[in-house]
Length: 351
Ligand SMILES: Nc1nc2c(ncn2[C@@H]2O[C@H](COP(=O)(O)OP(=O)(O)OP(=O)(O)O)[C@@H](O)[C@H]2O)c(=O)[nH]1
Ligand SMILES: [Mg+2]
Image 1 (cartoon, rainbow, N blue to C red):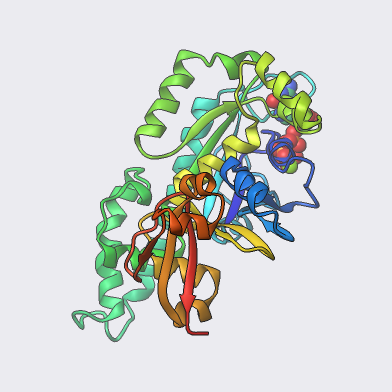
Image 2: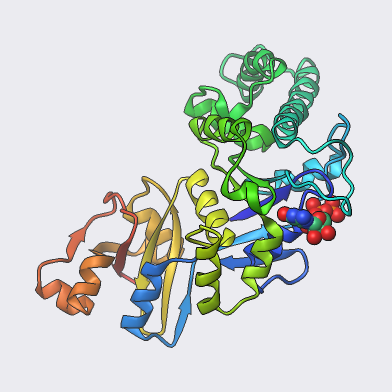
């Protein structure tokens, strides 16, 4: 799962990237383990040779966005397209030593970048509509070009009015076409307002309102003080807790960033408790056991017979898969079983 950090220059993207990577940051792309207490408990019980947490891959290799109403560069659009989710870091801190292209106004900047994402997509739609005019199958009802022309004609106007594709009510077929083009305003987004230590704990009313509005539209948003978070990330875990408490926080930014990306992507976590390798896996909410099997390995999905499922709480209470089975806490499920967040799975398969 690729997460691309975007934002204006000097908004604190690299600082938040290092904080979220918790000392693991290497270069500008890092696979960051997803913090998950449930996984830690399972590992403590299984004592596997190897443990593999779920990860998200943070990308801080995108060019900064130019301020002052300049359009996104093609290079920036190209890198952002490759991500599954955008993490927008918004400058909210004042600093005489870190110049900025304009006054510090996080509400204005978040709105401005949203508009730029939409305009970048509008450009693609207009170019494509122009090219489609020459298509031999444009008038052939049901042809791919016909379908695309129909969809793009419909979404052009809302885009012109500044509406993001992710906020449009589109059919499954429409969404499949949208996915082919990797539109930026169709991607889920998380917004991190990088503010002063004081405002992180107590945002202005204007910022609070924007955060609430974003959340209502399904975009997780929160305040963070990236420099403080980077300092916290460098402390021993024991000291971290105390430090966070002093700041009135319950968890570090890394946990919040990653949880927010999970939410925005609609992901849940399931586990496999192997003695060689115990793993946590990310899965789209609503996926079935066959999809979970395919996430582990295509061969396991092909040879799928039955899934043994036990929720991690019952597994921990029972102490082992065998004990959970004896206690009647494990169920045998077919391919269509809908996975729950926190399910532990063992797949009986023909391979
Ligand atoms: N006071 C304060 N300074 C910050 C904060 N976050 C980042 N900075 C400082 O701002 C400067 C730029 O931060 P970066 O994290 O490099 O910002 P960036 O968005 O990656 O910048 P570019 O990639 O150079 O465009 C650094 O000197 C940081 O220490 C913050 O929350 N408060
Ligand atoms: Mg940077």
